[in-house]
Image 1: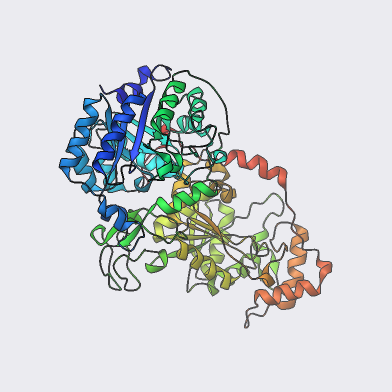
Image 2: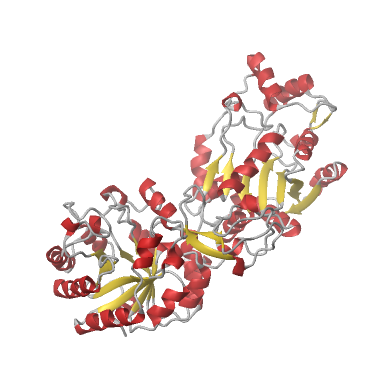
Length: 599
C-alpha cells in the first residue's frame, strides 16, 4: 500500500503521525529537464514525501487562440523525459503524483510508475475523463478549489463507482498569490463532514508572507493530513508560480513545522470570494465546438470538447447538457456554446391552489369581471411565443375549479402534492420535456410578458442555473430555473415540504445565479401580489381602471397609475423573521447517501 493510500485508509485516519507532504513542482521547471531534476533533489532533501508534476498536452488545456497555448505547447515532454524524472524521484525515495488534463495525458501518466493522480479543478466536471480515471487503482486526489459542492458530488459519484482504491479532496486555489483572507482553512472540516472524505490543503498564499510556512499548521489542527505546497529553486528568478513557492530551505522548515502538530481555527462557511470565483472563471473548461457545426445539427459528444476559454462571463455547463440538443445557428470551430445557441423548451409554470391562510379562494376572486387567476392566464398567454403556460396545482378536490379554469384558457394542467410544490414542477419538466422553467405564483397576476422574455434571454446568454427579476415590482416578475437545477434541488434538498419557498433552496454556492438588469423606470418597491383582503381591494382599483380585454396593458401603464395614486399604499412588506426560520428548512444535503450523478 502506498504512503498516500495508507493515510487515506479508514483505520489510519485522524492520526497526527500520518501526514503526507507533496512538493508541488507543477511547471516550475519551465520546460528545463535539468531544473526538474534539481527540484526533485531539493524536495527530497527538504523532507517531502512526494513530488507532483502536471502532465499535459496543450490541446487538452486550451483553445489554440488562448494566450497560454503556445507556452504550454513548447513545454510538452515525451515519455522518455518523464520516465527519467520518475526514476530520479524513486532514487530519492519519493512518491510521484501527476495532474492530468485529458485522455492523452492520463494515458501517458499511467504508462509511468507513478503513485497517485490528481484531478485538477479544470476537469472536475469532465465526466469522460473521470470515468476513465475511476478504472485506475491509484489513489486519486480531487481538487475542491473553485469548485461547487454539487460538482464535487457528481465527480465523487463517478470516481467511487469505479475501481478507485482511495479518494480524497484537496482544498485551495491559486490567485497569484491567494491573499490570506481567502484561505478559509476551516472549510477543510466542513468539506470532510459534507462528503465523508479526507480533505487536504494546497495553500497558495504569498511565499514572502509571514504565514507562508505556518498556515498549514492550522489545517493540521483541524484534521488535515495531506498537504501540497509549491517549491522553487530561487523565488527571486520569478519563474512559474513563484508567488506562492517556497525555496528548499523554507520548504524544509515547512515540513518540520507540520510535524510539530499545532492547532488553529477559522471560518467553516463554504462560499467563493471574488478571488476564488475569478480563479474558477479562469480555470473551468467550457464546452466548445470541435469543428464547424451547421444550424440544425443534433449535437453529439463527438462534436464537442471541453476547453478553457477567455470569456469569463459564462457559467460552466457539463458536456452532457448539450448532447442531443439541436443547434439554432451555425457555429465555427472553438465556438463556446451558450444555451441561446440551442433549441430549448421553456415552461411558464403557474403555482396556485385555493387553500390560503390569509385569503382563502383568492385565485377565484373576481377582479374587473374575471377571476384573478384568469388575469394571470391572460398575461402568461401573451408570453406564449417564448414560454408554454402550465398550471401546476394540487390533487385536492377543491382545486378542480382551478384546473377547469385553466382548460377554459387552453392552459395545460399538472396536478400533484399540495405541500411539495417542487414535485409539481418536476412533473411538468418530465411531462413536457422542458429545459427551462419560469416559476410564477398565482399571486402574481400582473406578470409582465416582455420581462418574461428578457428573463429567459438572460439565463440563456450566460448559461446560468437561476435568474431572478427582483428589481421589478412584486407581482409582476417571474424567476427562471434550468430543469437540471430543479432536479438537483429535488435530489439534494433536506426537506421538500418547504419548496413553496423555492428561491431559498437555490441560494447555495452550487448554483450559478444571476439577476436580470431592469431599466430604472421599472425599479419600484411596489407590492402588486395578491395575498390579503387589502391587496385585493388595491388590485381591483388598479385593474378596474386600466384593464381592457381588447388592449392589454403595459407595465408602464401600471406604474404610471400607481405613481398618480400614492394613496393606494403599495409598499412591500418583508417578514424577516419568517425568512430566517425558513432558511433553516431549505438547506441542501450533500451527505454520502445523497451523492449521485444527476442524469
